[in-house]
Length: 246
Image (cartoon, rainbow, N blue to C red; front, side):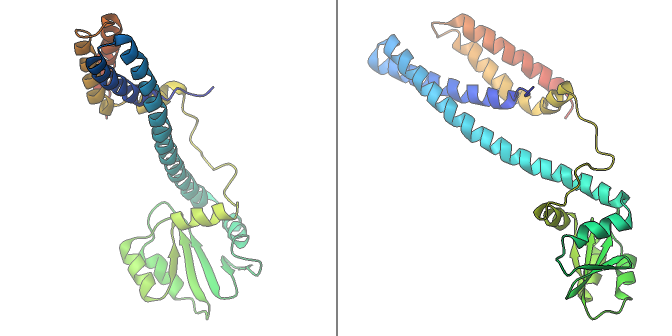
């Protein structure tokens, strides 16, 4: 069952409502005909609502894809940190070209010696020094989760190319080598927790302003009950959002 995207719905309704109020107020004033103003304002509100829905949903989807990638990177970092050397060597051997071959705990290609050191903490200068000690004609490349600034500086001075988890994720994704199932993947979050995670204090201010505006508009419109109910619901939601921890 697809979850309800409450922020998208509220934002779309807000845009549509603002458009409706602007068009209805202006057209009723200039034409003096409430029926014509109402029909045109509803049409304008629907068009603006549809356009705002497409625009906001596209932005949300883009942000969602980025957040999913970030979550996958964290899972991949933990997955590789807990995986065996044999597993890591086989995965990267398939991504580094047809001529790649495993030798010890490294993968050699035609022009590079590829090292792998995945752990949750940034690599230190000692980790880089251990690679520097190895004498190869091939260019040295290191794949890791992350590296400290000092270690990165040392690696640069000795011509060691570092690929962190961002580059590793991109490489594995391009070669369709991402794990089908990550080790110790987080359990699925329930629907209530998902809604609760999106319902935060940031929504309090816009909900309060929208609710207050609707209540004020009830004094000047032909349909006061609608605005009273809608404004009251938004104020209640605003109070509820305000009590949620950031």
